[in-house]
Image (cartoon, rainbow over all chains, first blue to last red; front, side):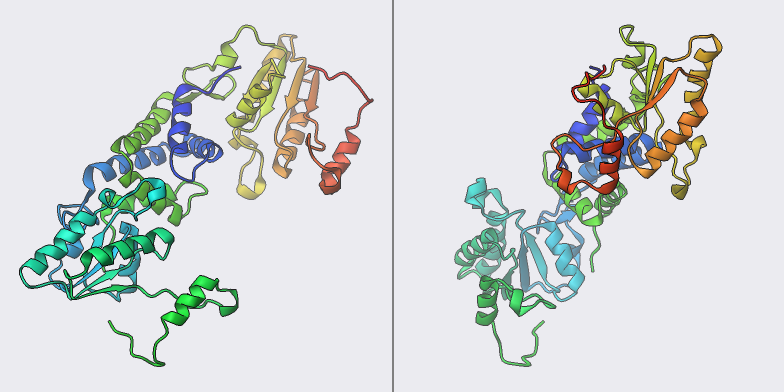
Length: 210
Length: 210
């Protein structure tokens, strides 16, 4: 039996190592690139190298950045008093798209998950506590730190852990609201979401704070 | 609103150009590679470049190859009298795994599909007819050419076209059997497959030819 030629086998293997890409998809992608114009494979290869050569993490908030500090940390127009803590750089993107938050960010790069062996020391939690502690030590604690980790088991555990550790270092620690998604249907909502939605109720027509 | 840093946006775009990879998956892959060990992105990049630098198509059968002729065409132990025509290099792999065919191959690189603008001239059909014609012209036509294009509309049309064009240039032109897949269930088979399965019936316990 003739095996696959070696460079093809190697590319299939490299694709199959990516999350959510199985051996069949890896084969399909490889053969697509063999048939596509040569530039397609080369563009992808160059983009891969560039992403590792040119992208770093912001030294302040650990968001992805092309320089030592990211555009959000460098932006003098943003609110220095509010800090939003998220799990991933993609969460920053999602929040920025809403244009509803004008403060700064802190990216943890994950959530506490004992089952996956991810403790607080594997995340950027030390750096967050330092950021809060430094401001508190000069008598200018953050007005608010918003814990915007995901409403999952791991995200909730992380938020709880952070709330405890930040206690006394910041004027107020808040958690993003959990409830029915806009456009959602009460009838089909799960119990936990419904409970959260009831617990989080507020006076009708309460003005939304910015 | 802060946009994505440019190298990240470029990698997402390059991933999203691949078939079956949408913008969300492209984002996920990109952020995975940002977090994964640096070698992962570099290995993939190197494999992509290698596949375009080192892989060519066999000049005889148009299968993928690391040299001008592929290992199957170079193998003196294979049966020169039988030729199996397939649409894609992956089909060669699938057939080789069965170890049931010891002849040579011819890869068309697609099937005739007028709706996609793919006529016979876009495939390696000219080369197949030349291969068959050359042997016929010296009085040694192929004993058998097996048309193993897919049992789809396009594959059947291609097989029909080839059977017509090969007529007189080869001792026999055959088509792979269409019927119920092994392990399949008659009750759930579609009509067309059932009809093919009836039409292709053979004497019970007929020995399978190699």
